[in-house]
Length: 136
Image (tube, rainbow, N blue to C red; front, side, top):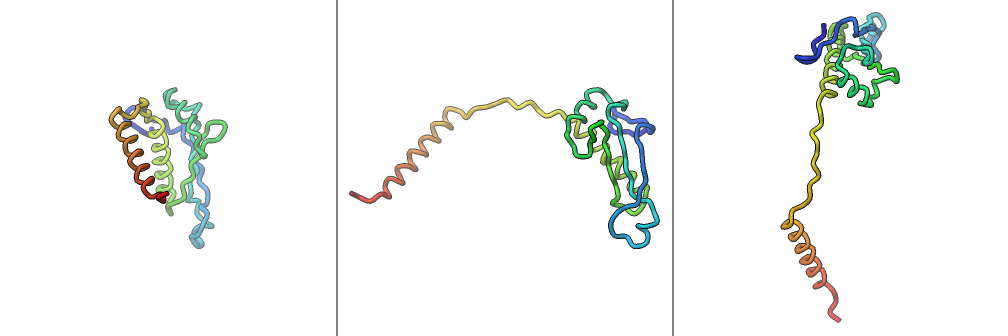
């Protein structure tokens, strides 16, 4: 059981791991050891709450496929265990970010004094520029 928050947890059978060889430099080790991890998490078929599923699917993340599967590739570390842990942490971060509800913004207007001050400053600036004209 993978604990995301105190209220959200994901059973281990819903998270798929595929171990692949990492790309990039690493000498002979990169050709022999499958240390990189592909984590696959199917959102529509998961046990997450419906509100969480909707928010995750609406993210528009590039790691999200059309079928609603999140694919995370972790290859930063040299060992499989560290990359697996990194992939799980990144999945956890994505789910936590999706659960944050944006605060509703109430539209506001500038106050009466702020509007008056702005027009007075514009008038004053215009008068300063008018004094720069040639005397005719």
